[in-house]
Every structure is written in structure tokens, then in C-alpha cells.
Image 1 (cartoon, rainbow, N blue to C red):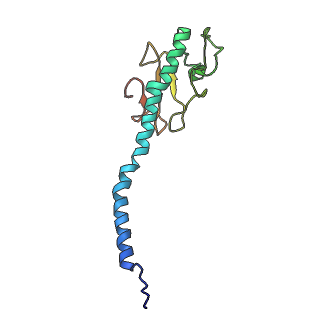
Image 2 (cartoon, rainbow, N blue to C red):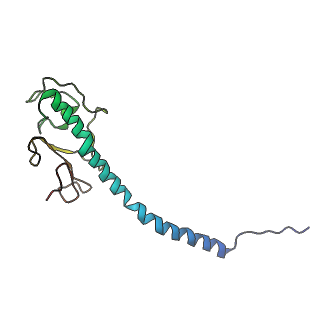
Image 3 (cartoon, rainbow, N blue to C red):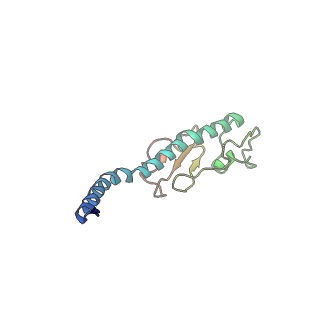
Length: 143
């Protein structure tokens, strides 16, 4: 009885590695841009939905939005600075903390807004952290 020892040849191993590298070369470029896209989407949801909903509840209770000086912190703790919210019924954010944008920076809140004069301007400075074309805003693109 003869036992045959059979394994992979060097050529077979190199061929399999080449196929894996070709597949990786096709897949990786498609995934690499997704992180930035996901961060922008998360910031847009905060700016267009989550934070405005909390700010609208604050405004319904008090008749005005927090001032720029009070900022988004007014959604978490009752402000003692003017205008003092007499009917504050917060915290208005479920997590009881002010969210940062996906890049770890604070959202910029201005009330009354320069662009939304009846309400507020709310935006993220984006990945670069400075006012530029990558900013995510609640009124359109910065010019």
C-alpha cells in the first residue's frame, strides 16, 4: 500500500494569491469612500432632523429658540441667561448630552440665523474643521 503525499504546489499557491489580490483590488476602492459618505449622512441627519426637532420642542415650550450664547446646551440644562426660558421642560435630547459631529467637533448654532433669520443656522464644519465647501448646513451650501 503506497501513501500518496499530496499538497499544494508553489504555482497553485501563487495563483490563488493572485486571484485574492485581484478581487481585493476591485472591492477596496468601492469601500474606501464609504466612511466619508457615512459621516456626511450622519451629520445631515443631525442637522436636518434630530437637533431641529429638539430645538422646535424648546421653541414650542418657551416661545423662542435658545440664543446663540445659550447654544445647544440649553437643550440639556435650563439656561439662567437672558432670555430665560420660563416653561423649560427638558432635557430635549434623549441622550441628555450635546452630540458632536462625526468628526468630533461641535455643531455650530446661531440664533437668529444669518441665513434662516426666522429660526436658526445649524451646521457642521465638516472633515476639515474650517468653513469651506465640505460644510453641512441647514440652509444650503456655504458660498
